[in-house]
Length: 142
Image (cartoon, rainbow, N blue to C red; front, side, top):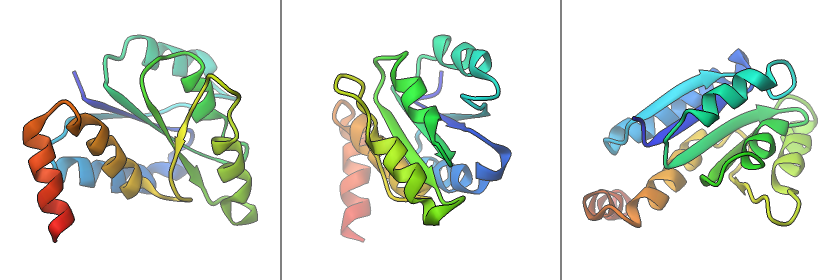
């Protein structure tokens, strides 16, 4: 069981996922990574998230950035969306990620913000993990 599930919509988003994985490893947080597109392989995305028991999901996507919202509409797990700069300086993806309908929230970090997504995931996990909270406080003091 991984605490954080990371899903990227495309192989081209792997660098951003790698940034997130590096931060999670620094904190000793387990994670699992998959590539699956909400547009090209929606059933693959559903297969990944239905069987997941992660406590937080990070979804990385550019262009229409449908992946974070697609996931959030199907799970009650907190979803952190990372918009990717593909076109329009990433503003299209940013707006698509953050403008979710009422009742289907996606926490959204900065464009290409894999590191911040991981830190936010750690903050969420630290609310019920005192050891992780201590690591986070130490990290913030650096």
